[in-house]
Structure formats: structure tokens, C-alpha cells
Length: 60
Image 1 (cartoon, rainbow, N blue to C red):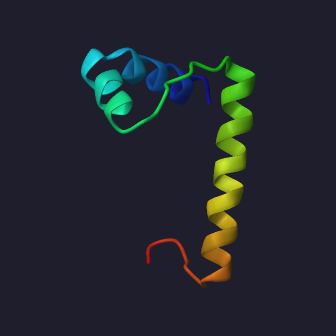
Image 2 (cartoon, rainbow, N blue to C red):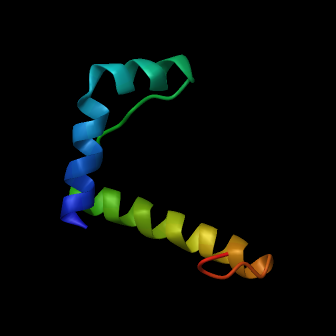
């Protein structure tokens, strides 16, 4: 998880990425490691639930 967190932070520091996110109406917020892990876990749970509801399996 630490490697993913570090990679996301690096991408968010890229001026072109930051500018594009602002154009799209997003504010980039750098979370600490624990906050990022919670967000990541919630996101995975959300999409796993959506996939289960729609009978989507890995590789589909």
C-alpha cells in the first residue's frame, strides 16, 4: 500500500496533472498513509459491490 500511496502522491505533484484536475473541478488532497489506505479500501469495497450486483467477474 505504501508504494501505491507514494506513486499517487508523485502523480499529484506533477504540474500538468494538478492543472488538469483543477480544470475538471477537482481539488487534489494529499492524505497520510492511513487516510489513503482507508480511502483505497472503501473504493475497492464500493466497486466490488457494484461488480457483484451486476454479476461482473474478474476478466470480464
